[in-house]
Image (cartoon, rainbow, N blue to C red):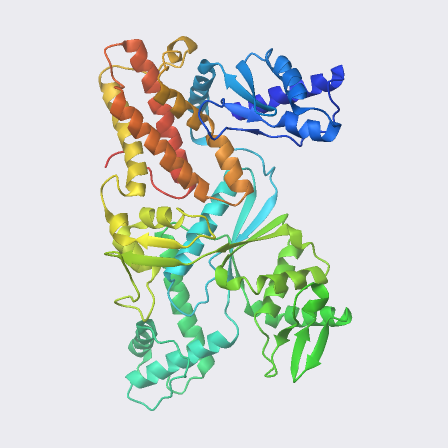
Length: 549
């Protein structure tokens, strides 16, 4: 908000400098306005002089002096300092920062939202877990990350469509059917052969038991395909219920088998073959990915006649393009890192602009209890499920901890910490700040205090802690816009943690309800603004904002 105003002021001065012949216009759009990392270097700084000097073959400090003179006439800027070889540090009038409070109160739940997306259509594909078992913790990070990305994009004016790619075809589904049939026959005491690489989890027994409860041995002659369909239905119902528990939903589900049924798989192969990019070798069909910049060619149809997963993935992405999305975002685990380039090569080879696809790769999760890695679930085979994690720590902690690191960073999820009802727990620390602010508002209302947003009253916010809070509040809209542009919802978590630390520090040093009614009204305005931003930020990443704790 304030940063955009300062940017506009610098741009006005830049244009005026061009008009006066102080520098050329070649540096337009190339310099930056940033918040300095060190105290004492101003509220904002620009590298204009450094950039323009390189282009115009001038001394940076000479250009900095000229720009400083022009900026001195801008009403928001109290003073300008030139540092080093030509960096320009801008110090604002201290009363400027309080102007964010009336805006927060006026916009309320919309504060922080922007229209950077301009209504562009974005398809966010996430989770897309095979319906062969319950959602694991790794799938949980995918779900939370994808949902948070969709939320920040929607807050930035994009028309977001959420899609789950339902992998209901291929070898893994056949093995699921074989596993379920074997367990069904086993429970009936009938001869059976469990597949060597079958699914071992107790959930397969649960599905088989439900089928026996329904029809006894009535399904003993059924084909593997029948068992596959029944298991798939049961497992996806479980997945859907898990996602609902953590408030994640989808606009559509795309079924992989439709790509086979309507011939789109073969259309891709034929189109690549027509371009000379397909050949046969050792009974398999190969895609000449080396022609598309890859190190080696890839098999797309095995000698058994079964497509590898690259082929349906290429067909699926072609379908996305045909649906005319402006931007397609895929959230994948890091185990996809080797296959993504092959799929993008296929998309390019078929004439589509793969720059419209962004893949977010995330690292997996390690669970810790008592400082040791949790390796096995007590109820489910060899993995911990999202349901188990929600039961232990709750949906808010699950979401917060999954977003506490950048997607490409490993997460060590400390179960003991996530359950603590103390300020050691980061999600508790942030939510407690919101609850404390709600308590202050109720107490103030009960004592007859009211928020006063007049300029005269807000001038009473002069403490260093108050200025720090106001600056952070003013940065909220830019943070949201940046999180959307870079598909980085972890920045919302970082922001909330910083804001919570600043607020708790302020509250420990200064009373809000004082004997001075004007000062109380000013601090109450600050607290009400903080409460709204905490609420907005928590909701932005799918967490609740409790009013009491």
